[in-house]
Length: 138
View 1: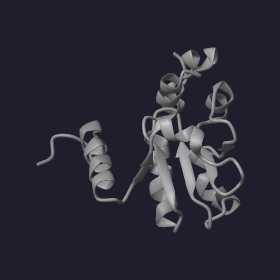
View 2 (view 1 turned 90 degrees about the horizontal axis):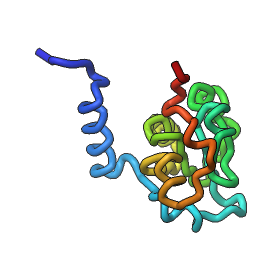
View 3 (view 1 turned 60 degrees about the horizontal axis):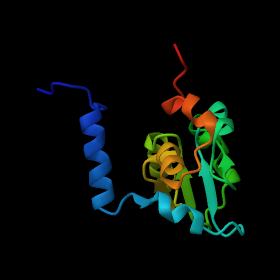
């Protein structure tokens, strides 16, 4: 019998690894973000909630929170590659799985905005006050 839930962190990590190794999930890394074209030929999609997005996001990104993505998918052009990010990389992973299933050429930002901002050295001061995955402070 199973000893934990299907969405246990260890199981989720296994799903992610399997999808990346199997070519189901394509990734982009922090050091590739600045070289992405900002000429409209690709879509930079940020699925953070509005509070997180206002605290920090990649320049040129379109904000569609993950909770709204299914209802707003028609705002995206399926003919363009979509590069998705969130704060930690988990919601963008879910968004990429959904968009890939709908026929989009989708790439997940490994490590999310938090890792990108720190690694690229451009983390805004407000990023320190952001909470992962939409969590609110206690």
